[in-house]
Amino acid sequence: MNYSLHAGGKRIRPVLALACAEVLEAETDKVMPFACAIEMIHTYSLIHDDLPCMDNDDLRRGKPTNHKVYGEAIATLAGDGLLNLAFETILKQSQVSPNMTLAALSLIADSAGVEGMIGGQVIDIESEGKTIDAITLMTMHLHKTAALIMASAKVGALLGGGGREDLIVMEEFARYLGIAFQIKDDILDVAGSAENLGKTTGKDNASQKSTFVTIYGLEQSEKMLVDYTNKAVDALSKYGAKAEFLINLSKFLLDRDR
Amino acid sequence: MNYSLHAGGKRIRPVLALACAEVLEAETDKVMPFACAIEMIHTYSLIHDDLPCMDNDDLRRGKPTNHKVYGEAIATLAGDGLLNLAFETILKQSQVSPNMTLAALSLIADSAGVEGMIGGQVIDIESEGKTIDAITLMTMHLHKTAALIMASAKVGALLGGGGREDLIVMEEFARYLGIAFQIKDDILDVAGSAENLGKTTGKDNASQKSTFVTIYGLEQSEKMLVDYTNKAVDALSKYGAKAEFLINLSKFLLDRDR
Image 1 (cartoon, one colour):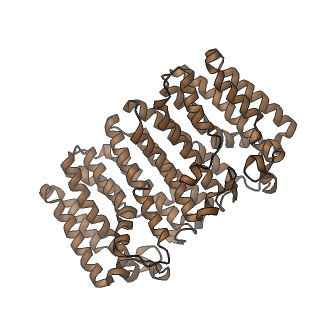
Image 2 (cartoon, rainbow over the protein chains, first blue to last red):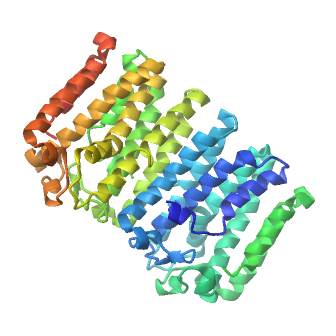
Image 3 (cartoon, each protein chain N blue to C red):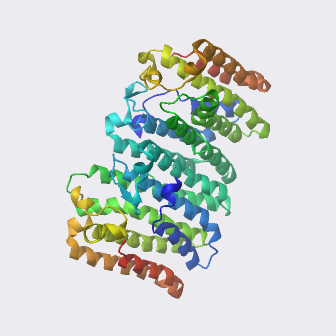
């Protein structure tokens, strides 16, 4: 569990949770247990995704994948343990009110489950070796990737004292950011370097996986990446200069090479 | 997820949760979401335990194991989904106060995690092909098997309005019952029939696993089974006739042939 949690990574989701609370000028201390829990859930999903029965990846975040180091049994249990620990961490360390704790827990649990991340992963597994259409691709990534990113932003807004309107804005921002993030991932898989990425490139092509690049082409994917990043940034307009960090983060994700 | 959840099984854990609330003369309706969640957690652990990288079992509850029907990838995700759904179910359906919901969630999360069930499973995996001593065996089963059974009883007592004393009593009852349950499992693996059990017998011997039978012998294991069942029953003495169902359940588990 420690190995994969501390293997690095961009920490986008916890950073988003903290930053979305900051936009509302709230203390971020109280967001921290939730931010950590979200990163644990993300990390567990990577450990299980990398297993031989799933994507069978040898490299992640520049290091051997969990099962390469500890074997498949312990990797499976490390994933299970991290999902469980996410809930334990919130339950033990939350400093917000019981009602607020339960509301944030619900946002996270729903986004990680079969109606969210796991559902998206099932679409992914079921799509293996098939050509899928753009609707299926988008549905898959809205669940597999965007759902937990959206929950991160909403949890930050909620714990930051945001109202219904703030949660809607943050959800819209994170939906665009999440899909842009996935498009960039798909572009990097064909155009990036394994050294920078810290994971195997060309995997999508080798496994005949449908991606934004295979469905829309590289040029159109680049346009969508810019378009969705702009829409993510536009969604934050009501916050003016307070959203500067989130805007810079969005642009950083657009330009990243890993 | 449905396949394994609805494959039958004895439902010991949810029944315990409901019955421990009943001992305190509480309504059991409010315990139901928690009881269901506990069974989901138990079922996810069985799905993952049965995977080829773990115990590699083909038969469970008289039916092909999850991965035999749906493949390893979907079985892994079905397990993940059930663990997540356990928390979703409680968060969506709890009818008790936020503080009570959080307290019961904590009991369940702690018992299922690395300090509980998953920790026990890791000891199990790490003990493969080794001869372990009685301390390691007991530690393993207190975590792997008894922890969730103890949490079931305590959640029932907590939601049933029990005080600290009730929780201590129920924990003691369930600790003895949980270990007795495991001893019976080990006995049935050598002395039971696959037809009755709905799972492969002789597995422990074939995999050279240390069990209560290999460490203490069959005769001593039978004695321990009776002794711990009696201690479980004795723990309930303060409840008198109100504990009749729990006492009968304990005796049923002692005498079961599956």
